[in-house]
Every structure is written in C-alpha cells, then in structure tokens.
Amino acid sequence: MLRHTRRLALLLPVLGATVSAFAADPAPPVVFLWPAGSPTLQGAGEKEVTTPPEPKPGERINSIRNVHNPSIEVRLAPADKACGAGMLVAPGGGHRQLVWGSEGADIAAWLNSIGVHAFILKYRLEQTPGYQYRVQGEALQDTQRALRLIRARAKEWGVDATRVGMIGFSAGGALAALADIRFDRGKSESGDPVERQSCRPDFVALVYPGWAPMDITAPKDAAPAFLTSAGLDDAFHARQTVEFHNSLFQAGVQSELHIYAHGGHGGAIKARNGIPFGTWHVRFHEWLTDLGVLVRR
Image 1 (spheres, rainbow, N blue to C red):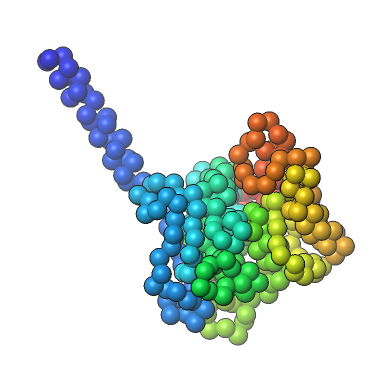
Image 2 (image 1 turned 135 degrees about the vertical axis):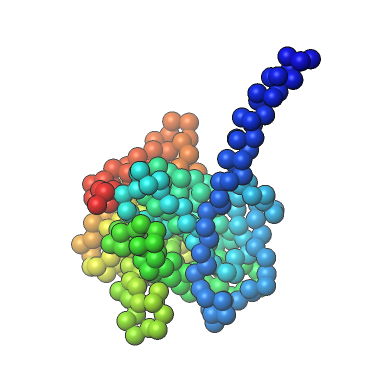
C-alpha cells in the first residue's frame, strides 16, 4: 500500500502539469467582421447550430449552421515557422452549413505547419431558413470584408499585406472565385479604415469548387489561382474547375490546374487510401513555393 501511495504521489505533479497545460491552451481568437448594429446584420439574437451541439471548450466542431454574425477565427503559425503570408479559409457545405472541421480547422492546422497564418471564415449561408442571404450578396460581402480586415490588422497579426490569399472548398470555392474576379482596391472615401483596404486576394486556391450559374469572367488583373478537383466521379465540380481555369487563361492570368482521374467530392486534406487526389495539398505547397509566397521576409 505504501509503495502504491508513493507512486501516486510521484504521478500527481505530472498529471497536474499536463491538465494545467491543457486548460491553459487558449481558444483561437474570433473577430467579428461587422460592427455591432451594422445595417447588413440580421438575426443577431439567433443562435448558431453546431455539430456537436454546444461543444465543450477544445471540442472539435464538425459543422456550423444558422450564421448571422459572420467572423474569422484567427489561427497564427508558430513564430519559428511563420513566413508572413496569410490565407482566408472558406469551408464548403452547399451554402447550408460550414464544414468547419475538415475544411476549416484541419486546413488551418496544415497551413500553420508550412508557416502560413490562417483565418477561417464563418460566412452567411444562402440556405438559411427564414432569411434571404445570397452567395453573390451577403456571403461575398463577408468574404470581401474578411480580406480587408486581415489587411487592416496585418501588422498586429504578423501578416505581409501583399501576401494575403484565399482558399475555398466546394461552396467556399465559389466565394474564392468571386473574390478573385470581383474586387476593389479599397474605398478611399470611406470613413471606415477597414473598408479603405483592398479586398483583392493576392492568390487563390479552389478545391473541388462549385456554384450555381453565375458570371465567372475573369479580368486581366485577377489573382493567380490554383485549381483542383477529382474527375468523372465529381464531374459537376471538375467541369466548373476547368471552366474557371479557362476564363483565367483567356484573360492572361496565371493558373495551375490539377484534375485527378477520380476521388469523389469532399474530404479536404485527408488521404484517401492512396488515391492521388489525396495529395492535392502537396501540389498546392509546391505552387505556393513557386509563386514565392512562402519566402520569409
């Protein structure tokens, strides 16, 4: 009995330190995009719906619905890895939900591992019952506001304001496409310092993107793009990926395209039993390197 008591006494400090370290790990900061009372906000009193419902601190959130107060979750790369680039991450979910875990948190963690600061976008969803949100309306406004906000607070977050990109998945890919072709360089007349910032991304990535019919004609000053999708087993998204590439190509904008033989829709960054589509992020890393995004300055 004495021997067991001594062992327990030795273990307790270690366990206590572990628990304290876990408890001290702060949740990522959340920054709301619009000031309280902004005329664009609706449903401010409604509660978001998450899976799992009412997650405990530190518990993984898989999906989010019923978004009315859009925001970005700030996930900065470790100081010893950070290269200064930042990326807005737009999860998909058919504009009904945000696939927050696999297309948000997992992507942010990977970006952090290669030295890129990540900002996960929580945008308003067109398929929110009882509301009239639109992809090319409120969701695009949230996207543009997020890009402006990252630049407005670039110094605070250690971001190079000339290396602010965006990556979008599925429905989030539609927002990345729109951000790439519909932008301004800042509203100089605005009294809001955030609105005076440019909402043009410096580079974009679209992963199995998809959208309802919309004009995707690229201007000649659209940002360079990385585009990828699986093939015939995700033909709808592969077709739109190719169409966007063609639009950029015709405008003389750099675009790298990867269409894999198969791989289906979704899955984000998780490998799929050796299917090559599960390596798209390796190609993306190479593209970022070739573009000069990852150089520490």
